[in-house]
Image (cartoon, rainbow, N blue to C red):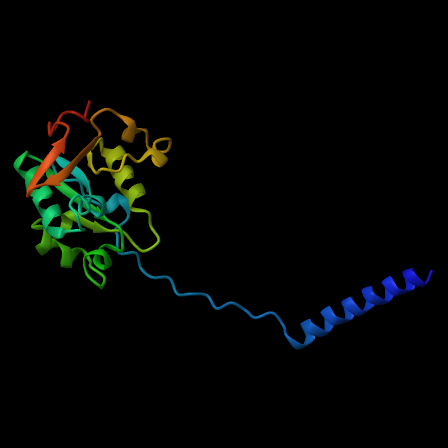
Length: 188
């Protein structure tokens, strides 16, 4: 019987402590963070030029020993010579990988030698792979990347089609393609 009274007493003390704590330390209201305007235009606004090919810029700039805008510019030049119009997507962190500050489309255009309208830096927190594969799937475009996008193939079956992904490397100052640069491969 005394054990029961002791348990009841402990329970009452615990309840009183909780009530006392709430009275002295009320819950704080969280302040809502202001929403930033997205830097990447919505998918519907991203224009697709004639003979477009999507380039995973954040991946391709790592084709050499270190991340490089020069290597990416050479890859884009090779694609242009083959008759493609490259449309390049980057993760929001691209500027911090190449330098120590944010890079937007205007800052990247002169480094890459392509029009600013063909460069898209996705907003912080947005997964560039989704934007890349969505645009490629919607318009049946090829994607230049060494990423195989295995995590996204259920949502974007286009990535599993033969010829949809074009990979390569940078060897001794030259772009080496692992596949055909034929513009008709992925359109079928």
